[in-house]
Image (cartoon, rainbow, N blue to C red):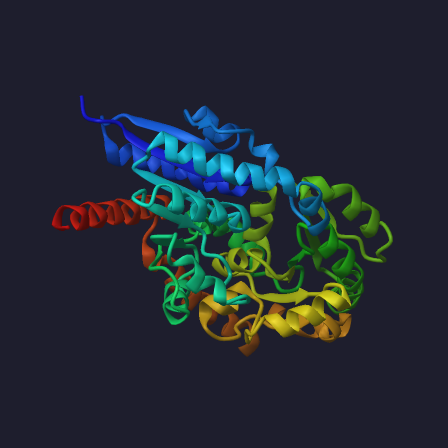
Length: 395
């Protein structure tokens, strides 16, 4: 029997677990009969795959400035524990997934303890948006970055960061769920009685900042298009808050529950108002013309203006390399502006056609790595290990 492939995975939250789980499926297919031994930090999905945890993932699953400060002594100790556990496990590879404030510090500590262990980080930190100095600082302890977005390898090269490989975004695997069948396409074509998505985000702060202005925009749109039906996919953990706010709207949208119903709404929708975020990529791939919005606290916006040097904050626009989706940020975000732009893309005409053409460019860029991000990630990782072995042999 061949020697087991020994792998340490460190994730900090559910989204990282989902990526890592798909990585393991693809890796096992690639390894064939070769055994796989797993250790690290992950949730139930990874433990069910055979991962032996160094400690419970719940110890490090914390977000927000206040909660992080409160748990800082434990977080610092767990960084040391993760690096020590990895060094003692002597893996062929350490794969860290997202959660960069924790995982990249573990990588740094491991590199000092066991410099020969290759380290791959999946999900490029947003160094291209802010704190660009982080790119150069990762070089000594990250051998390869696996990127979700196609512009990130060039951005990391420009910033003198680690070598970065675009492996694809998981959303590309959901094209079948995003694209309408014949009946849904007929529904989408109805501009007199269209389905319009209202997507105010998945965080409490987004809901509180965006729902009031979205509600006023919906009233204006409904007045202009009396046959419109408004659909609001509600994230489960914030459904109560959303329902409470929607109850005060003069024109109430239909709340949509569950992921399957959400994607069904995407397939029938003719246009959308959406918070900035990954949802703008989903809408672009679903070919739903969109008006995007962001509003935060004034103090947050002031800090962001100083730190973030980008022409757009909308992911779909960043992938396109130009402003395909109209965006309204902070004081520019008004109900009048949202309604005006939404009505423009709702009707057949140049505004709608321009977005749809841009979405075709976005899809081409997003699909450039191939159909399976997880399989691409495995291939990029194995290529690194082959390079490392070759360098060791020649040395």
